Image (tube, rainbow, N blue to C red; front, side):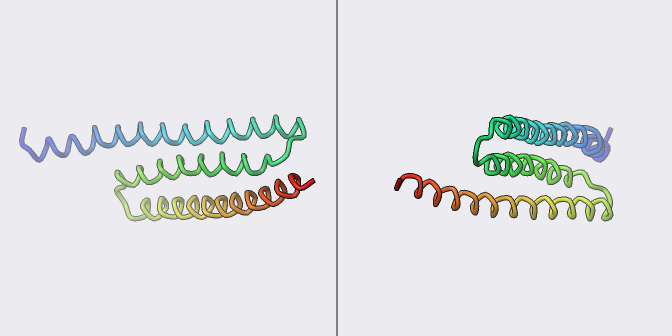
Amino acid sequence: MDITSVIHFLENTILVNVVAICTFVLEMAGICVLMTSSVKCFIRWLKRENHIQLDLAHGTALALTFKMGGEVLRTVVVREWRELGILGAIIVLRAALTIMLHWEIKSEEKDFGKNVGKLKKY
């Protein structure tokens, strides 16, 4: 067994399996964060609580970060340019969603701060 075949084995077997497992874990973490955040916010909505959008946006942004981490990790084992292009497009879309969510969060926090200030005056 020469060094080339050992490297080929390591690359095709171990690396691919480790990346697949880690990607799965990151994707599941994103799903769990999104579902937990959604259920908590839905329960708060049923109770007619305020500022649920802000908490839901935070949860969604965190879930997208986990999902994007899985996509970035998946690029390690990409074999074709076409597949890399698809993964790149997914990463760009998720990054754009994350940026939009952070903008919404900042806007909502700013509005929340103004409303809290008005409530304190009275």
